[in-house]
Image (cartoon, rainbow, N blue to C red; front, side, top):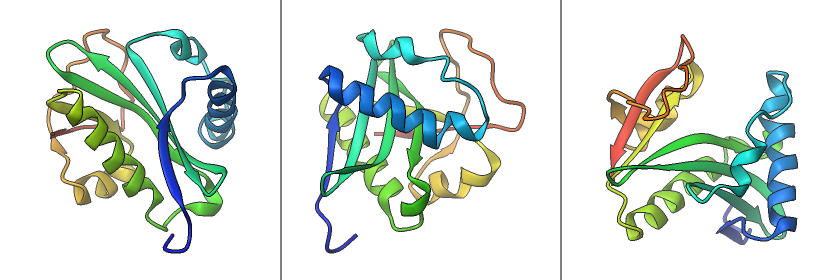
Length: 149
């Protein structure tokens, strides 16, 4: 990571959104395996899609949903399998937190699978109720976590 230029930005153009859709399908939904059921979120104002580029190649992605009362939900964060365990996930999440904090967001919440709970806890996330205003189902093994920004 030290010799690479990292850049996180909001996917705004059709080209950036298409690249992000392909990235999250390959690195997140193909592992389940299902077709991405949430592609519609790319056209919704309350959903933000962030891309992490290493030099000129996408290596990470995060999907944030804005909720009422200055809360947001981290719906997906994923790093290219070949680039994992190099600090990119932490970098992406910390950058998203900084952007959200500047926007006046007070709380970022997520639901963590058992194999990533320590990742979040290392970054200051603690267990707290998820309280999804849309009442989407929760994975039976997921742990609700959050962090005050």
